[in-house]
Image (tube, rainbow, N blue to C red; front, side, top):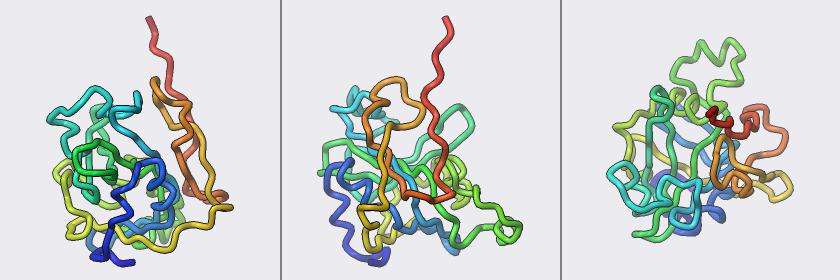
Length: 194
């Protein structure tokens, strides 16, 4: 399935769509990353979601339509990207956590054997040159596009708790391809000091 192909599968519930994105390719110009790890966020019913408390200017893209890019700034320095899923008007999205760089922005980096160029959501965005201004992009039209391939075989898909959340972390909506060296390391949320 190519970038211009029907992305109707994205209209499903985020936890059901997330594993279908494993192996999909995200492109920006010549740069491409094959997804190896994602996390689902289910809006109003998910305390880990940016949309848990309703629509805000920051999370409005999450409310649809499906197939658009939701970007946000985290820790005052990193951009992260999500694929919006679900029916129009209901917030949900799948965080792009990690992937294998297929075609890099800077060929010298992969020539040097760097396997971690898109390991983690901020690195994935850097590898593709995704910024806050890309929020709302239609993934069929670009400049960032999504190419769905054949779903990963179920025996290769693993799931577990989401990374770095204080609320809803135990929900096993992080999905990854087993044995992939590009999958990020699991880290629970740090406790806040009083």
